[in-house]
Image 1 (cartoon, rainbow, N blue to C red):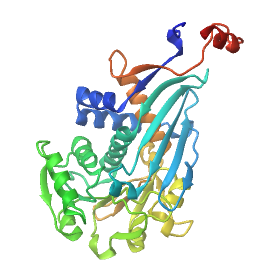
Image 2 (image 1 turned 90 degrees about the horizontal axis):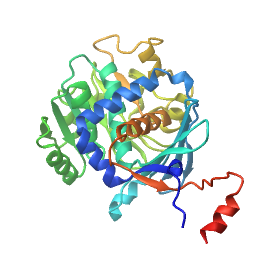
Image 3 (image 1 turned 60 degrees about the vertical axis):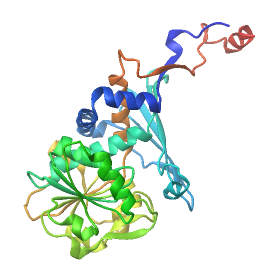
Image 4 (image 1 turned 45 degrees about the vertical axis):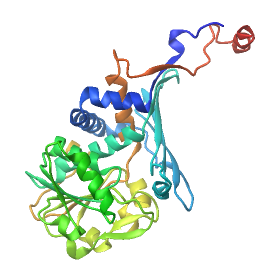
Length: 347
């Protein structure tokens, strides 16, 4: 049987290879690198195709496609969100992604994105906090101690410089899991019995719970002046974490309003409730934090450009390494008009 030509092989990064790549680079260095790449792409935001993700909702979760292109490279991610999966020992979120050359349409990278999504979500949170959180923020409250909590904590340490994380979850076992995983990473870990306790002394408040419902993880009286709220758990229709009164008091920053108004915390507000697109803050087209008493809120739902950035980072990071497998996934006959002949010769 004829072996495939080298040009037809597509680099594939498996779960095992992604984990090896993280250890090779170092998780904090990788989080910083991802934050830098995401920032660079946000600064050229107008160049990208932008559309709300294509979602298929059910009463148990959602399956989505997230596409974008900068004109030279096309990327998409397949991702699901099924909060009930953990009860059966499954992940809430799984994902994979692909990059293609716009000029030819040929894929140039195929990668797992369950782990990579956790990394890019945390890197995006930390990038935004670096810009919007109070100066010299050192303490973060992490409310919701599931699969994303350690990534968020380490990203805030690596990118923002926090040195204390205060943990709370309605499931004490989740808090204990998170605390043990963060041991030895240079953070002071405080286990809290209530959300109110977790917020005490925190300049950054991250909410990341999984239940698909209109929830009130933070009530209005819990949030004082001068904090940055990183709200990442409300990420689909019918799923929120914050009391509407908090949204009324905060200056709200989003990725892509057309998507966030459907899926984010602001789905609770009027369709014209004012928000600022974060990329505009980076480019100087809009202001960020202007007052020490200001409440800034990142209403984060995740956007395709962040996945594009993460995939491009991995594409560049694996060059010259063995952290990928060449896949024979493209039919690429010597004569592009003779696909049938290639099939015949294989017999």
